[in-house]
Length: 450
Ligand code: AMP
Image (cartoon, rainbow, N blue to C red; front, side, top):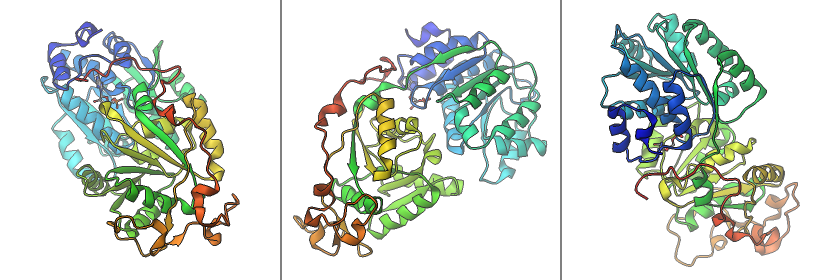
């Protein structure tokens, strides 16, 4: 199957080829003809499956078919986050570069006036987060009466973030007769209810997450008491000479605190989460991409839609509550054929979460012995420690200090063997990182040049 078999316009095929894609992904094979045929679509697909092109390409084609009128938007994509909105818009511009269509994105957290001004110029495809879109509609800066296609992207995430009321309000502003596409990584009862209300006789598409990340990512976990995690992370970054690591925390507050702690240890770090202004996030991301900061500390939601490719290391500082999020997170590494590492720091209270993840992956995540690491409260080791210096022979306290070890997990008093010697458990499956994943998914669509 090639892109030219999907009935796409030559202008779109050219843009796709220029992006370096030669084989459509499974979701693209199924979604593109369905959307072109005017069908509603319910798609179970995660980031990394190529879902964006799956709806953007056929939508551009439909928009190109009609002469642009006064340029009220004719297609609307709702996304949960600003980052995803920007990313979808970037894709639409890239795929639409040989067509005369205008794409515009709007999201909150930035000044509304430039968006009002830009909308006045008109656009064909509008990508929006729900809240800002409603503000703009209220100010009569945008008219949704010409919408022909509505997409809810990452619908599960939008519901998680409490956007259901906003979505309902948007639905009241768009014409009754329209085409609807709903993309969601997971199916909760809420999603099913939304799909039932929204979709008419939909084509249902379910694709497994792209298998490449799982196969290409070398996963490992360390058991470590909660209060030692930051010290172990500092150790791993230094010992591994990591230069670009994306670290996931569960909360915004946790992201801020860890960022400060890393900075305190002499590691350049920045946090990226929903409380940060758009400009602060963009700046942090840019610095990270340019390797000016070593660690980007992110919450799950903020990291969605970040377009970072070929990330060498991802760290689950805290395991996600939802196992699917683990797959999303580690999918950030090992992209485009490059091998990546996903490291999870697992405290005793997270064992159950790890088991849930393993059940989803249908494989174990190898737990490797925790190395010895220093517990330096404030004074950081110089980033370039003397060669051969024993990690905890310098300013830090040994990590086996009973005070720190007094966690509920009973790791105290392990002497100088430290965390590693104390609770090592190597399940002997080191090679699991290269095992083929059972029940795997995506097929051979990774059609770039490799
Ligand atoms: P998405 O799931 O839409 O976030 O896309 C995941 C990544 O796959 C993005 O970096 C896309 O640029 C890339 N991609 C999308 N379609 C293809 C394709 N057919 N071949 C290779 N890469 C693709």
